[in-house]
Amino acid sequence: MEALNSFLTRFGRLMGGLVGTMFQSGREAVDQVWKNILPFLAFVAVIVGIMNGTGLGTWIATLLAPLAGSIWGLLALSLIIGLPVLSPLLGPGAVIAQIIGTLLGTLFANKTLPLSAALPALFAINPQVGCDFIPVGLALGEAEPETVEVGVPAVLFSRMITGPVAVILAFLASLGM
Amino acid sequence: MDWLVQLAQGFIGIFQAGAEWWWAVFVGIVPLVVVLMTAFNAVIAWIGHERIENFGKFASQEGIIFLPFRYLLLPVVSVFVLTNPMAYTMGRFLPEKYKPAFYDAAVSFVHPPLGILPHVNPGELFVWAGIATGVATGYGDAAVTDLAVRYLLVGLVVILIRGIVTERLTAMMWKKASA
Image (tube, rainbow over all chains, first blue to last red; front, side, top):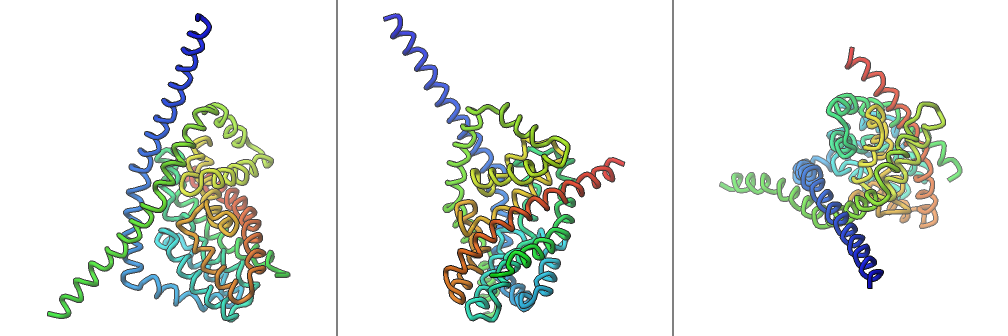
């Protein structure tokens, strides 16, 4: 009886601990979504609305698509999209990358673009990835406000270098495709 | 009067397009994020913050050998397990000076695996799928698989380079900011 009692007590404590941890985890998760993710989604929704509702997104994409024909064009594309002023604007929801990607896809479908351009193109349309999200991403990593102040320009300027570098790497990696 | 009606329709249309997107993401992704985050928070609690912090500390040591731990292993594991956008929470286990570079490496890895592991970022699948569906039509499915593998591998190299470059830039700007 003694042994059974002590087993039950320990078992009860263990279950209580498990449930407590799960509940606390759920509370933290909902807090994060409520405080960081939903407000951000709301902001992106406005931008997506402007892009999709006015046709601005399609217009920009049509403007940029002809650049995809050559490695130089792709490099130029990655430089333009990676500009620190543009990249945070082009980032939200990866809308621009998805629209240009879909437009370029039609050019691969009718073989206007060679297969070897596909990999560099994937990187050329995307040097802005996450540039709109830097403060939130850093906040999710519990960064101090000073870190955010320094981190935002550091990432933005880094993309001017690493954006074209990625395109060149992809170009080399698609040799033999 | 007609132009006024059209203007009003165009105006509200912009916000309807935004609302449509917001609702799609809210319904499609947020529940998954909440459940994943809850599970992840619990797992962290059970593993113990200490051990994960120790890995963060291990990865944040000076020296070239630790760069791949910080900007390759840590972001890749984070993105595979936690997916976008929860992967960035792993930054909390690194010192402040490495957080921007870690974010840069992690966020740059949310698209390259899409051809093989679409679960990491279903909301932005068309960054990959836009080009991939075109390639499939023009050059066949085998070309798509080839492309998917190469996208992933080049992505690994790119995030390591991004982490290193951003770490240097952060250090330079930190000096300027504190001067």
